[in-house]
Image (cartoon, rainbow, N blue to C red; front, top):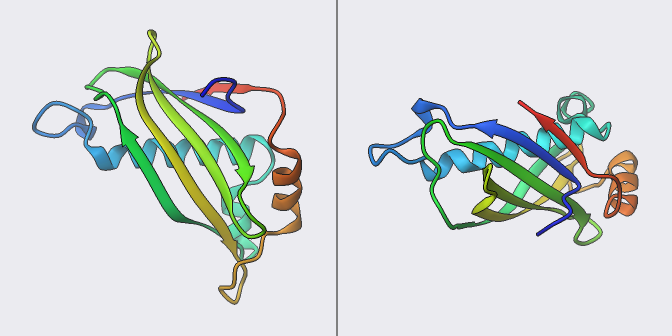
Length: 144
């Protein structure tokens, strides 16, 4: 996947590694989630603000294909593209690549929806507008 809508750089911390000296497979989901939250903030859809309004953005499916392990001290980037999958679902297509060589580490498809105050799926208008116009756009980059 090229031409990411958003990309963020991060680094592996020692405590994220298992006894084999590689990043524990569950930690990759934290990396992916952090990138999604940063992307949403960047485009004006703050995850925390939605929660305060009684709108909960939730993951309903996660598909992760692990390709190459990261180790302590490695730098990496998480790139993502975001699009509507159906009336009530959206998807984040995400890649993790090791830096500086951009070796593929992980590929993911994360399906989500929004739940209103009564727990029913409902995409808020502001998020719907982002989804409907969000497939294209300028690439954004940031570092943490």
